[in-house]
Structure formats: structure tokens, C-alpha cells
Image 1 (cartoon, rainbow, N blue to C red):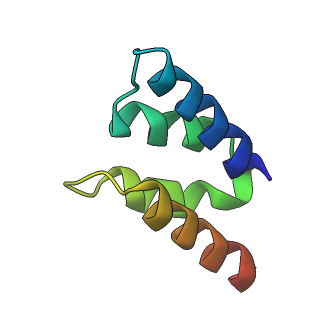
Image 2 (cartoon, one colour):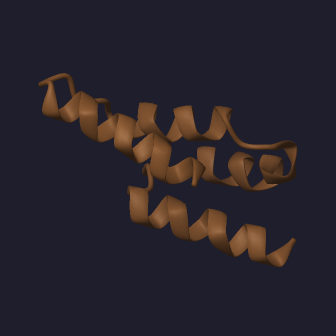
Image 3 (cartoon, helix red, strand yellow):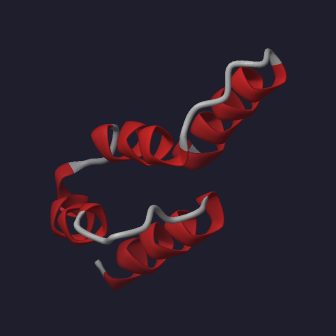
Length: 67
């Protein structure tokens, strides 16, 4: 649900002609996650390339399932 809300906000910015970079989008998502995602966030932030929405969503779902 959180990811859908952030994606909707991202889409609204794009629609108004003020797109947000993928890096900023991911950081915004990371800042809103609970502490249980801290280790995953640390590993994702250190990656050379930012993940797409689908890739990030997939990682978060897999991590949540493993908890």
C-alpha cells in the first residue's frame, strides 16, 4: 500500500512536468520504511545503479516475506 501511494505521488509529479529522479524516488521510499528494512536499504543504497520501481518493489516484497 505504501509503495502504491508513493508511486501515485511520483506519477503526479511527472504529469505536472516536474519529474523526480529515480534516485530521489528510491530515497523517498527508503525514508518511509520501518526499521525492519534497515539492512535491505543499506545494501540497496550501496548499489551502483538505482532500481526501477518494479525492481525495488520486488526486493521489498521478498524481504517482507522473509521476515
